[in-house]
Amino acid sequence: MTAAVATARTRIKICGLTREQDVDAAVQAGADAIGFVLYPASPRAVAVERAAQLAACLPPFVTPVLLFVNETAETTVNALSKVPGAMAQFHGDETPARCWDGCGRGAYRFMRAARIPLGAAGAGFDLVKYASDYSRAQAILLDAHVEAYGGGGKAFDWSLLPPAVDAHLVLSGGLTPANVGDGIRQLRTRCKSLSVDVSSGVEASKGIKDAARIRDFVAAVRAADASS
Image 1 (cartoon, rainbow, N blue to C red):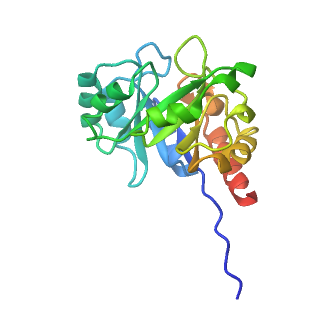
Image 2 (cartoon, rainbow, N blue to C red; image 1 turned 90 degrees about the horizontal axis):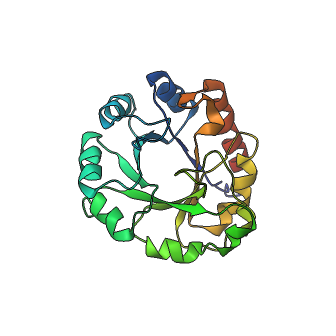
């Protein structure tokens, strides 16, 4: 009997949700994590109390993620304590020590966003060192470096990333149902594991998700998994 070969399963985070129906659509499509933006300057921002309400809609084994930009340690710990099971995503200029302190010195898990320059400049970003500096992070999230915090729906050049990174990576920035499969195929073998994170690529408008686009995105990820 020939043993079955297991295919890699790319985990999926849908970020920037503001409505219950969008949370439900993401869960029904098969999302593994749901992101809530707690950065007031973002058009997708929600208050922590609203994030807690939305997270209460989640079934078991779907992780709420709270996105912070340059918040104080006290603020982040307080927010995480209000959303059971949540992990933090630091998307500003937080140092390794600030991330650790902002998660109650290990009481909560966190991801750290790496802002990769657009174009050829992306080759100068030392992702291996960055992952080492933030070794306490559960994952390094890869996003495009634009003027405002967050990727702004821009995709950086994935081919310029190093061939081997000793970290779990989360690909983000400009992902859509049309290009996510290519991103998965390019990066899956370069890291411990690969996940994907989408926001604007599944939206009808900023902060308002489109259920059909979410389904298409998840289907494209699963197709890439099946072909790997």
